[in-house]
Image (cartoon, rainbow, N blue to C red):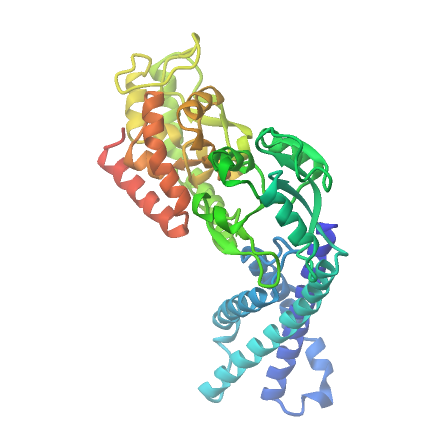
Length: 471
């Protein structure tokens, strides 16, 4: 499967739909103004506004489609779901175009506005969904006829795993699973699945198996006697983008949102890897970029004053650089204004406390009002962090936290942030035990991620900063 080619097909057809729509809509408006326009049609093609609109409006639609997630998981589209998504996005886009481009049109009556909007809506939706329906139907038919498949591994090796393998293999309408092999949970060979699929090792090596074989889907079909391992299995999948499906008996012990994976296929429950709707994820990143740029520009005088204060308060560099662990366990460099003496960790990693003698007097002030965190907006701009998300930690302390609370690894499903629910409710942690205690707030954020939650956390953060209640 060439995902890029498939994405390009959707983008090309969406662009063509927007191109045709705006061209015909422009012609409709000209006919409304002048019913005899066809006798001097060349007037349209000599109009600069026509060419400007037909060039820029399709780009507007493509940006909107990127934000609503239209080009994600292009081989797994549902025609019914795509219908609803297209209606919603087209409606939003048409309303936006109306206020930006059409509201100041010269009209004879307000009925003309309604006719223009309905015409644009009908054309945009008609072309867009027709093209998408053709491409999606062709893709779905290829999946159902087994001409297109998704590399799949089964977690489990005995009765349930064998039954799932047989059920999926015998489907008249294929669900698209291309079985690469299985991993065992308990080492009780011979495995019932061995005669049918290659044994790829133990579930402890699941993340390596996924990477090596380019696995796109994992089906968890363990036995009830093995359910105590489910937490470890999920942790092995945290750093991946695979689709996770489980047999119905397991849904009550799986962490995550679940949904039925199909009507005509083997009954499995899919765990979505997306914690937020695609449009919210896109908007969250857009807000990260816009707000970071504004803060870096508008607050530049404060940076200068803070930098001077750090330089005059103690010997050492102005900025403090430290490697932290981000999304999917990838390391990145985080920047802060230095609030401690130079070489504060010359004897090894140490957590700070409110009475830490390593903190300079000026450092204590900037920590309290969060000025030391300002350089992190640059890290947000680079894409390593977000405005809101669990605080990033060092690998040294992550190992200690995971030893006490293995579910900490769930936080690596998302980008770390400048502020977080844990930071708002708990503040800085000075011990590993406090880090574990703060973890419950970050997990609460993980389970309830939304733009509304982000705005709420940002507002609380501002209140804490302005009131000087930072811990």
